[in-house]
Length: 187
Image (cartoon, rainbow, N blue to C red):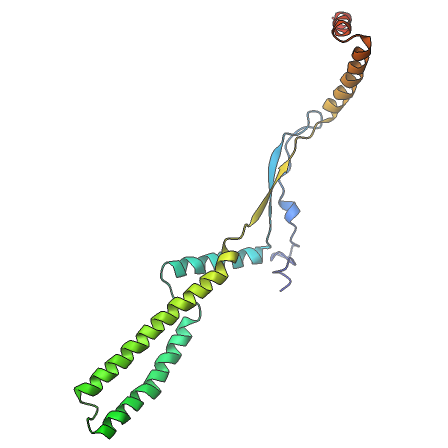
C-alpha cells in the first residue's frame, strides 16, 4: 500500500517526481532559455493501475465482459439448473403433462430465454457501473507541466548592473546628449 501512496518506486529507489525534471540547457555566462518541464504525478505502481483501468475501459467499450461477471453468470445458471428446471418439471408432472410435452418444452424455453435476457441486462448494468467507476481514474492527468522562465547568466547580470548604472548616469547627464557624449568617449 505504501507503493500506491508514494512509497518505493518499485526498483528499490524512492519515488521522486522532481528527479524527472529536465535540466535546463544554458551556460554560466549566457543563462538558460525559457522551457517547460514535466513531472510525473504517480508512482510506477500507480501508473500501472491507471494503465489497467484504461485497458478495462477499452474492453468494456468494445463489448467485453465486466469484471466479476463470469462468477455471477455461473451462479445464475447453476441456480437455474438446480431450482428452476426441477420446479418446472415437478409442476408439469403434477399436471399430468409430463416432461416430454410441448407445453413443458415451451415453458422451459421461455424460462431459459428469461434467464439469458436477465443476464444480458445485468451484464450491461454492471459494465455501465464499472465504466462510471473507472473513467475518473483511467483518464486522470498523469503529468504536470510547468513553465520554467528564462534565467540570466553571470555575464548578463554583470552587464545589466553596469549598464543600469550607466543609464542612471545618463539620465542625470541629460538623456540623449549624455548618451552621445558617452558613445563618443567609448569610440
